[in-house]
Length: 464
Image (tube, rainbow, N blue to C red; front, side):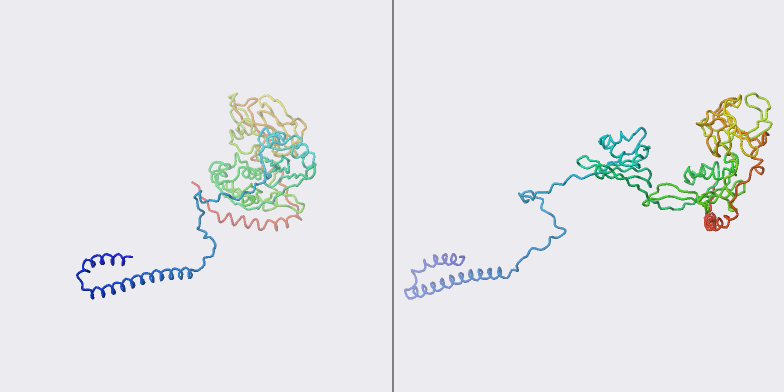
Protein backbone atom coordinates (compact mmCIF):
# COMPACT_ATOMS: atom_id res chain seq x y z
CA UNK A 1 0.00 0.00 0.00
CA UNK A 2 2.92 2.35 0.58
CA UNK A 3 3.77 2.09 -3.11
CA UNK A 4 0.23 3.21 -4.15
CA UNK A 5 0.41 6.17 -1.79
CA UNK A 6 3.74 7.20 -3.23
CA UNK A 7 2.41 6.79 -6.80
CA UNK A 8 -0.74 8.81 -6.13
CA UNK A 9 1.28 11.69 -4.78
CA UNK A 10 3.53 11.84 -7.80
CA UNK A 11 0.63 11.51 -10.24
CA UNK A 12 -0.93 14.67 -8.83
CA UNK A 13 2.30 16.52 -9.30
CA UNK A 14 2.73 15.11 -12.74
CA UNK A 15 -0.84 16.09 -13.85
CA UNK A 16 0.09 19.71 -13.66
CA UNK A 17 2.84 19.11 -16.13
CA UNK A 18 0.63 16.93 -18.35
CA UNK A 19 -0.81 19.83 -20.32
CA UNK A 20 2.58 21.08 -21.38
CA UNK A 21 3.60 17.72 -22.97
CA UNK A 22 3.04 17.15 -26.74
CA UNK A 23 0.31 14.63 -27.61
CA UNK A 24 2.70 11.98 -28.81
CA UNK A 25 4.77 12.18 -25.69
CA UNK A 26 1.69 12.20 -23.41
CA UNK A 27 0.41 8.98 -24.96
CA UNK A 28 3.73 7.27 -24.39
CA UNK A 29 3.87 8.45 -20.75
CA UNK A 30 0.37 7.09 -20.04
CA UNK A 31 1.37 3.68 -21.30
CA UNK A 32 4.47 3.58 -19.19
CA UNK A 33 2.50 4.64 -16.10
CA UNK A 34 -0.13 1.91 -16.60
CA UNK A 35 2.59 -0.71 -16.97
CA UNK A 36 4.35 0.45 -13.81
CA UNK A 37 1.12 0.34 -11.73
CA UNK A 38 0.35 -3.19 -12.88
CA UNK A 39 3.81 -4.43 -11.91
CA UNK A 40 3.55 -2.90 -8.39
CA UNK A 41 0.10 -4.38 -7.69
CA UNK A 42 1.13 -7.82 -8.92
CA UNK A 43 4.31 -7.81 -6.78
CA UNK A 44 2.39 -6.91 -3.60
CA UNK A 45 -0.15 -9.75 -4.12
CA UNK A 46 2.66 -12.25 -4.67
CA UNK A 47 4.40 -11.10 -1.44
CA UNK A 48 1.24 -11.67 0.63
CA UNK A 49 0.67 -15.06 -0.92
CA UNK A 50 4.24 -16.05 -0.21
CA UNK A 51 3.88 -15.15 3.50
CA UNK A 52 0.69 -17.23 3.80
CA UNK A 53 2.42 -20.21 2.20
CA UNK A 54 5.42 -19.84 4.54
CA UNK A 55 3.15 -19.65 7.61
CA UNK A 56 1.23 -22.78 6.60
CA UNK A 57 4.48 -24.61 5.97
CA UNK A 58 5.82 -23.62 9.41
CA UNK A 59 2.67 -24.82 11.14
CA UNK A 60 2.91 -28.15 9.36
CA UNK A 61 6.53 -28.69 10.48
CA UNK A 62 5.94 -28.00 14.23
CA UNK A 63 6.29 -31.38 16.10
CA UNK A 64 3.31 -32.65 18.05
CA UNK A 65 3.67 -32.07 21.82
CA UNK A 66 2.64 -35.04 23.96
CA UNK A 67 1.98 -34.75 27.73
CA UNK A 68 4.95 -35.97 29.82
CA UNK A 69 5.66 -36.49 33.52
CA UNK A 70 5.40 -33.45 35.76
CA UNK A 71 8.75 -32.26 37.10
CA UNK A 72 9.32 -32.87 40.82
CA UNK A 73 10.01 -29.15 41.17
CA UNK A 74 6.64 -28.26 39.68
CA UNK A 75 4.17 -26.75 42.08
CA UNK A 76 0.40 -26.51 41.83
CA UNK A 77 -1.06 -23.14 40.95
CA UNK A 78 -2.09 -21.21 43.98
CA UNK A 79 -4.56 -18.93 42.23
CA UNK A 80 -7.99 -19.94 43.55
CA UNK A 81 -9.63 -18.89 40.25
CA UNK A 82 -7.59 -21.50 38.40
CA UNK A 83 -8.67 -24.35 40.67
CA UNK A 84 -11.38 -26.76 39.67
CA UNK A 85 -14.83 -25.76 40.75
CA UNK A 86 -15.77 -29.41 41.20
CA UNK A 87 -13.08 -31.04 43.41
CA UNK A 88 -13.28 -34.79 43.90
CA UNK A 89 -14.99 -35.70 47.19
CA UNK A 90 -12.64 -36.97 49.99
CA UNK A 91 -13.28 -40.28 51.68
CA UNK A 92 -14.28 -39.98 55.34
CA UNK A 93 -11.93 -41.78 57.79
CA UNK A 94 -13.41 -44.31 60.16
CA UNK A 95 -12.71 -43.78 63.90
CA UNK A 96 -10.10 -46.21 65.25
CA UNK A 97 -9.39 -47.78 68.64
CA UNK A 98 -6.66 -46.15 70.72
CA UNK A 99 -4.63 -46.94 73.83
CA UNK A 100 -5.07 -44.86 76.97
CA UNK A 101 -2.39 -45.13 79.69
CA UNK A 102 -2.53 -44.34 83.42
CA UNK A 103 0.34 -44.48 85.91
CA UNK A 104 -0.70 -45.69 89.36
CA UNK A 105 -0.07 -43.03 92.01
CA UNK A 106 -0.49 -42.93 95.78
CA UNK A 107 -4.16 -43.29 96.71
CA UNK A 108 -5.26 -44.80 93.40
CA UNK A 109 -7.43 -47.91 93.26
CA UNK A 110 -8.45 -50.14 90.39
CA UNK A 111 -11.96 -48.70 90.55
CA UNK A 112 -10.74 -45.09 90.38
CA UNK A 113 -8.45 -45.81 87.43
CA UNK A 114 -11.26 -47.54 85.49
CA UNK A 115 -13.41 -44.49 86.21
CA UNK A 116 -10.68 -42.17 84.88
CA UNK A 117 -10.68 -44.24 81.68
CA UNK A 118 -14.49 -43.80 81.50
CA UNK A 119 -15.04 -47.53 81.91
CA UNK A 120 -17.90 -49.04 83.87
CA UNK A 121 -17.86 -51.28 86.94
CA UNK A 122 -19.24 -53.98 84.66
CA UNK A 123 -16.06 -53.75 82.55
CA UNK A 124 -13.98 -54.05 85.72
CA UNK A 125 -15.99 -57.05 86.93
CA UNK A 126 -15.63 -58.91 83.61
CA UNK A 127 -11.85 -58.45 83.55
CA UNK A 128 -11.29 -59.40 87.21
CA UNK A 129 -13.36 -62.56 86.90
CA UNK A 130 -11.87 -63.71 83.61
CA UNK A 131 -9.03 -65.75 85.16
CA UNK A 132 -7.06 -66.42 88.32
CA UNK A 133 -4.17 -64.36 86.94
CA UNK A 134 -6.47 -61.34 86.54
CA UNK A 135 -6.68 -61.07 90.34
CA UNK A 136 -3.24 -59.47 90.23
CA UNK A 137 -5.04 -56.29 89.17
CA UNK A 138 -6.24 -56.02 92.77
CA UNK A 139 -2.61 -55.59 93.88
CA UNK A 140 -1.47 -52.58 91.90
CA UNK A 141 1.16 -50.27 93.39
CA UNK A 142 2.41 -46.74 92.70
CA UNK A 143 4.64 -46.83 89.66
CA UNK A 144 2.69 -49.59 87.89
CA UNK A 145 1.14 -48.65 84.56
CA UNK A 146 -2.34 -49.60 83.34
CA UNK A 147 -3.25 -49.25 79.66
CA UNK A 148 -6.66 -49.69 78.02
CA UNK A 149 -7.47 -50.28 74.35
CA UNK A 150 -10.96 -48.85 73.92
CA UNK A 151 -12.97 -49.11 70.70
CA UNK A 152 -14.92 -46.10 69.33
CA UNK A 153 -18.10 -47.74 70.60
CA UNK A 154 -16.70 -47.65 74.14
CA UNK A 155 -16.06 -51.39 74.27
CA UNK A 156 -12.99 -52.41 76.29
CA UNK A 157 -10.88 -54.55 73.95
CA UNK A 158 -7.63 -54.97 75.91
CA UNK A 159 -6.07 -54.21 79.30
CA UNK A 160 -2.31 -54.15 79.84
CA UNK A 161 -0.67 -54.06 83.29
CA UNK A 162 3.04 -53.20 83.30
CA UNK A 163 4.53 -54.15 86.67
CA UNK A 164 8.19 -53.67 85.74
CA UNK A 165 9.89 -52.98 82.40
CA UNK A 166 10.40 -56.76 82.15
CA UNK A 167 7.12 -58.10 83.55
CA UNK A 168 3.50 -57.47 82.70
CA UNK A 169 0.08 -58.93 81.83
CA UNK A 170 -2.18 -58.54 78.79
CA UNK A 171 -5.92 -59.23 79.00
CA UNK A 172 -7.62 -59.52 75.57
CA UNK A 173 -11.38 -59.70 75.04
CA UNK A 174 -12.66 -63.00 73.68
CA UNK A 175 -16.45 -63.34 73.45
CA UNK A 176 -17.76 -62.36 76.90
CA UNK A 177 -14.52 -62.89 78.80
CA UNK A 178 -10.83 -61.96 78.61
CA UNK A 179 -7.86 -64.17 77.83
CA UNK A 180 -4.71 -63.67 79.93
CA UNK A 181 -1.19 -63.47 78.54
CA UNK A 182 1.92 -63.10 80.70
CA UNK A 183 4.42 -60.66 79.19
CA UNK A 184 8.06 -61.44 79.96
CA UNK A 185 10.99 -59.61 78.43
CA UNK A 186 14.64 -60.60 78.71
CA UNK A 187 17.05 -57.68 79.19
CA UNK A 188 20.51 -57.33 77.74
CA UNK A 189 23.13 -57.74 80.48
CA UNK A 190 26.22 -55.53 80.38
CA UNK A 191 29.05 -55.35 82.89
CA UNK A 192 30.21 -52.21 84.67
CA UNK A 193 33.45 -51.83 86.61
CA UNK A 194 34.17 -49.07 89.13
CA UNK A 195 37.07 -48.38 91.46
CA UNK A 196 37.31 -45.76 94.19
CA UNK A 197 39.23 -44.44 97.16
CA UNK A 198 37.84 -43.61 100.61
CA UNK A 199 38.33 -39.96 101.52
CA UNK A 200 35.40 -39.65 103.93
CA UNK A 201 32.99 -42.61 103.78
CA UNK A 202 32.18 -45.59 101.58
CA UNK A 203 28.82 -44.12 100.64
CA UNK A 204 30.26 -40.76 99.53
CA UNK A 205 33.10 -42.48 97.64
CA UNK A 206 30.57 -44.70 95.88
CA UNK A 207 28.43 -41.72 94.91
CA UNK A 208 31.48 -39.96 93.54
CA UNK A 209 32.06 -42.93 91.22
CA UNK A 210 28.33 -42.91 90.30
CA UNK A 211 27.70 -46.35 91.78
CA UNK A 212 24.01 -46.89 92.64
CA UNK A 213 23.23 -46.49 96.35
CA UNK A 214 21.63 -49.95 96.45
CA UNK A 215 24.81 -51.49 95.01
CA UNK A 216 26.98 -49.69 97.58
CA UNK A 217 24.80 -51.03 100.40
CA UNK A 218 24.90 -54.54 98.95
CA UNK A 219 28.69 -54.38 98.81
CA UNK A 220 28.81 -53.20 102.43
CA UNK A 221 26.56 -56.10 103.42
CA UNK A 222 28.84 -58.59 101.63
CA UNK A 223 31.77 -57.42 103.74
CA UNK A 224 29.61 -56.94 106.84
CA UNK A 225 31.15 -60.00 108.51
CA UNK A 226 34.74 -58.80 108.14
CA UNK A 227 34.52 -54.99 108.12
CA UNK A 228 32.64 -52.59 110.38
CA UNK A 229 31.99 -49.79 107.91
CA UNK A 230 31.37 -47.36 110.75
CA UNK A 231 34.60 -47.98 112.64
CA UNK A 232 37.08 -49.69 110.33
CA UNK A 233 37.45 -47.65 107.10
CA UNK A 234 40.40 -45.26 106.88
CA UNK A 235 41.22 -42.48 104.45
CA UNK A 236 43.05 -44.04 101.52
CA UNK A 237 41.26 -47.40 101.66
CA UNK A 238 40.30 -48.59 98.18
CA UNK A 239 37.47 -50.63 96.75
CA UNK A 240 36.64 -52.05 93.33
CA UNK A 241 33.47 -53.64 92.05
CA UNK A 242 32.28 -55.49 88.93
CA UNK A 243 28.49 -55.57 88.59
CA UNK A 244 25.71 -56.02 86.05
CA UNK A 245 23.62 -53.39 84.30
CA UNK A 246 20.33 -54.20 82.56
CA UNK A 247 19.24 -52.71 79.23
CA UNK A 248 16.02 -53.11 77.26
CA UNK A 249 15.96 -51.87 73.66
CA UNK A 250 19.27 -50.13 74.39
CA UNK A 251 17.70 -48.21 77.29
CA UNK A 252 19.10 -48.62 80.82
CA UNK A 253 16.45 -50.08 83.14
CA UNK A 254 18.32 -51.11 86.30
CA UNK A 255 21.24 -52.79 87.99
CA UNK A 256 21.87 -56.50 88.38
CA UNK A 257 24.05 -58.68 90.57
CA UNK A 258 27.50 -57.92 91.95
CA UNK A 259 29.88 -60.34 90.22
CA UNK A 260 33.07 -59.55 92.11
CA UNK A 261 34.19 -56.92 94.60
CA UNK A 262 37.14 -56.17 96.83
CA UNK A 263 37.92 -53.79 99.67
CA UNK A 264 41.40 -52.90 100.92
CA UNK A 265 41.01 -51.89 104.56
CA UNK A 266 44.13 -50.61 106.32
CA UNK A 267 46.31 -52.59 103.91
CA UNK A 268 44.36 -55.85 104.14
CA UNK A 269 42.39 -56.94 101.07
CA UNK A 270 39.05 -58.72 101.22
CA UNK A 271 37.54 -60.18 98.02
CA UNK A 272 34.07 -61.58 97.35
CA UNK A 273 33.16 -63.65 94.27
CA UNK A 274 29.64 -64.60 93.17
CA UNK A 275 29.21 -68.36 92.69
CA UNK A 276 26.27 -70.68 91.97
CA UNK A 277 26.97 -74.15 93.36
CA UNK A 278 25.94 -77.52 91.91
CA UNK A 279 22.66 -77.35 93.86
CA UNK A 280 21.74 -74.00 92.31
CA UNK A 281 22.42 -72.02 95.50
CA UNK A 282 23.98 -68.60 94.92
CA UNK A 283 26.42 -67.14 97.41
CA UNK A 284 29.55 -65.04 97.76
CA UNK A 285 32.89 -66.56 98.67
CA UNK A 286 36.50 -65.47 99.03
CA UNK A 287 39.07 -66.95 96.60
CA UNK A 288 39.61 -69.88 99.03
CA UNK A 289 35.94 -70.87 98.86
CA UNK A 290 35.04 -69.54 102.33
CA UNK A 291 31.61 -67.95 102.64
CA UNK A 292 31.49 -64.18 103.07
CA UNK A 293 28.58 -64.69 105.44
CA UNK A 294 30.13 -64.81 108.89
CA UNK A 295 28.53 -65.95 112.13
CA UNK A 296 28.23 -62.30 113.26
CA UNK A 297 27.94 -58.99 111.47
CA UNK A 298 30.59 -56.52 112.56
CA UNK A 299 27.98 -53.78 113.05
CA UNK A 300 24.27 -53.74 113.97
CA UNK A 301 23.79 -50.69 111.71
CA UNK A 302 24.56 -50.24 108.06
CA UNK A 303 26.75 -47.14 107.89
CA UNK A 304 26.92 -44.32 110.46
CA UNK A 305 29.55 -42.50 112.46
CA UNK A 306 30.55 -43.73 115.90
CA UNK A 307 29.97 -41.61 119.01
CA UNK A 308 32.07 -43.57 121.49
CA UNK A 309 34.15 -46.71 121.11
CA UNK A 310 34.46 -49.55 123.61
CA UNK A 311 36.17 -48.15 126.75
CA UNK A 312 36.13 -49.91 130.17
CA UNK A 313 36.89 -46.60 132.00
CA UNK A 314 34.53 -44.19 130.22
CA UNK A 315 33.06 -41.22 132.15
CA UNK A 316 29.28 -41.54 131.98
CA UNK A 317 27.83 -38.40 130.30
CA UNK A 318 24.83 -38.13 132.66
CA UNK A 319 26.09 -39.43 136.03
CA UNK A 320 29.52 -37.77 135.54
CA UNK A 321 31.20 -40.76 137.17
CA UNK A 322 33.72 -43.31 135.98
CA UNK A 323 31.63 -46.22 134.87
CA UNK A 324 32.50 -49.14 132.64
CA UNK A 325 30.95 -48.63 129.24
CA UNK A 326 30.50 -52.26 128.34
CA UNK A 327 29.64 -51.76 124.71
CA UNK A 328 29.80 -49.52 121.68
CA UNK A 329 27.61 -46.50 120.96
CA UNK A 330 26.59 -45.85 117.38
CA UNK A 331 25.25 -42.34 116.80
CA UNK A 332 22.42 -42.39 114.28
CA UNK A 333 19.20 -40.50 113.53
CA UNK A 334 16.09 -41.52 115.42
CA UNK A 335 14.26 -44.28 113.57
CA UNK A 336 17.37 -45.83 111.96
CA UNK A 337 16.77 -49.61 111.58
CA UNK A 338 18.70 -51.87 113.99
CA UNK A 339 19.51 -55.39 112.79
CA UNK A 340 20.36 -58.60 114.62
CA UNK A 341 24.05 -59.36 114.14
CA UNK A 342 23.49 -63.13 114.09
CA UNK A 343 20.79 -65.81 114.16
CA UNK A 344 19.33 -66.33 117.61
CA UNK A 345 16.36 -66.21 119.97
CA UNK A 346 15.06 -63.13 121.82
CA UNK A 347 15.35 -63.58 125.61
CA UNK A 348 14.25 -60.07 126.59
CA UNK A 349 12.27 -57.27 124.91
CA UNK A 350 11.06 -54.42 127.11
CA UNK A 351 11.93 -51.46 129.33
CA UNK A 352 15.12 -51.83 131.40
CA UNK A 353 16.19 -48.83 133.51
CA UNK A 354 18.94 -46.72 131.95
CA UNK A 355 18.95 -48.96 128.87
CA UNK A 356 15.47 -47.74 128.02
CA UNK A 357 13.85 -50.02 125.45
CA UNK A 358 16.13 -53.06 125.31
CA UNK A 359 16.36 -56.27 123.26
CA UNK A 360 18.59 -59.18 124.29
CA UNK A 361 19.33 -62.01 121.83
CA UNK A 362 20.91 -65.36 122.73
CA UNK A 363 23.06 -67.01 120.05
CA UNK A 364 24.60 -70.47 119.69
CA UNK A 365 28.01 -71.09 121.30
CA UNK A 366 27.43 -69.03 124.46
CA UNK A 367 27.18 -65.68 122.66
CA UNK A 368 24.73 -62.92 123.57
CA UNK A 369 24.01 -59.45 122.14
CA UNK A 370 22.12 -56.44 123.56
CA UNK A 371 20.52 -53.48 121.77
CA UNK A 372 19.57 -50.50 123.98
CA UNK A 373 17.92 -47.03 123.88
CA UNK A 374 15.52 -48.14 121.11
CA UNK A 375 12.68 -45.82 120.16
CA UNK A 376 10.46 -48.80 119.32
CA UNK A 377 10.49 -52.47 118.34
CA UNK A 378 9.78 -54.05 114.99
CA UNK A 379 6.39 -55.69 114.55
CA UNK A 380 6.20 -59.13 116.16
CA UNK A 381 9.32 -58.73 118.32
CA UNK A 382 8.83 -60.40 121.70
CA UNK A 383 10.51 -62.81 124.08
CA UNK A 384 11.00 -66.26 122.54
CA UNK A 385 10.90 -65.13 118.90
CA UNK A 386 13.66 -66.44 116.63
CA UNK A 387 15.47 -63.85 114.52
CA UNK A 388 17.84 -64.15 111.59
CA UNK A 389 21.10 -62.37 110.91
CA UNK A 390 20.41 -58.97 109.38
CA UNK A 391 16.73 -58.98 110.39
CA UNK A 392 15.46 -55.60 111.59
CA UNK A 393 14.46 -55.91 115.24
CA UNK A 394 14.07 -52.28 116.32
CA UNK A 395 14.84 -48.63 115.67
CA UNK A 396 17.35 -46.16 117.09
CA UNK A 397 16.07 -43.86 119.81
CA UNK A 398 17.10 -42.01 122.98
CA UNK A 399 15.13 -43.82 125.70
CA UNK A 400 16.58 -44.45 129.16
CA UNK A 401 19.82 -42.70 130.08
CA UNK A 402 20.69 -41.52 126.58
CA UNK A 403 21.78 -37.95 125.84
CA UNK A 404 20.73 -38.19 122.21
CA UNK A 405 19.61 -40.66 119.56
CA UNK A 406 22.05 -43.56 119.36
CA UNK A 407 22.29 -47.34 119.65
CA UNK A 408 24.14 -48.91 122.57
CA UNK A 409 25.39 -52.35 121.47
CA UNK A 410 26.87 -54.99 123.80
CA UNK A 411 28.55 -58.30 122.98
CA UNK A 412 28.89 -61.02 125.65
CA UNK A 413 30.68 -64.39 125.63
CA UNK A 414 29.56 -66.78 128.39
CA UNK A 415 28.08 -63.82 130.26
CA UNK A 416 31.26 -61.72 130.12
CA UNK A 417 31.34 -58.46 128.17
CA UNK A 418 33.80 -58.52 125.30
CA UNK A 419 34.85 -56.10 122.63
CA UNK A 420 33.63 -57.78 119.42
CA UNK A 421 36.31 -55.92 117.48
CA UNK A 422 39.14 -57.65 119.35
CA UNK A 423 37.81 -61.20 119.58
CA UNK A 424 37.29 -61.85 115.87
CA UNK A 425 39.56 -64.89 116.02
CA UNK A 426 37.39 -66.41 118.77
CA UNK A 427 34.16 -66.06 116.81
CA UNK A 428 32.74 -69.07 114.94
CA UNK A 429 34.54 -69.71 111.67
CA UNK A 430 32.98 -69.03 108.30
CA UNK A 431 31.33 -71.94 106.52
CA UNK A 432 33.42 -73.16 103.58
CA UNK A 433 32.33 -74.99 100.47
CA UNK A 434 32.36 -78.78 100.71
CA UNK A 435 35.60 -80.43 99.57
CA UNK A 436 33.89 -81.96 96.53
CA UNK A 437 32.55 -78.52 95.53
CA UNK A 438 35.91 -76.71 95.62
CA UNK A 439 37.23 -77.94 92.21
CA UNK A 440 34.01 -76.76 90.55
CA UNK A 441 34.23 -73.43 92.39
CA UNK A 442 37.81 -72.83 91.22
CA UNK A 443 36.91 -73.77 87.65
CA UNK A 444 33.86 -71.51 87.49
CA UNK A 445 35.51 -68.50 89.15
CA UNK A 446 38.87 -68.72 87.36
CA UNK A 447 37.88 -66.53 84.40
CA UNK A 448 36.00 -64.14 86.68
CA UNK A 449 39.06 -63.64 88.89
CA UNK A 450 41.31 -63.09 85.87
CA UNK A 451 38.97 -60.50 84.34
CA UNK A 452 38.50 -58.76 87.68
CA UNK A 453 42.26 -58.63 88.23
CA UNK A 454 42.89 -57.23 84.74
CA UNK A 455 40.32 -54.49 85.30
CA UNK A 456 41.88 -53.58 88.63
CA UNK A 457 45.37 -53.44 87.12
CA UNK A 458 44.28 -51.25 84.21
CA UNK A 459 42.41 -48.75 86.39
CA UNK A 460 44.71 -46.13 87.87
CA UNK A 461 43.07 -43.54 90.13
CA UNK A 462 44.37 -40.72 92.28
CA UNK A 463 42.55 -38.53 94.77
CA UNK A 464 43.83 -35.52 96.66
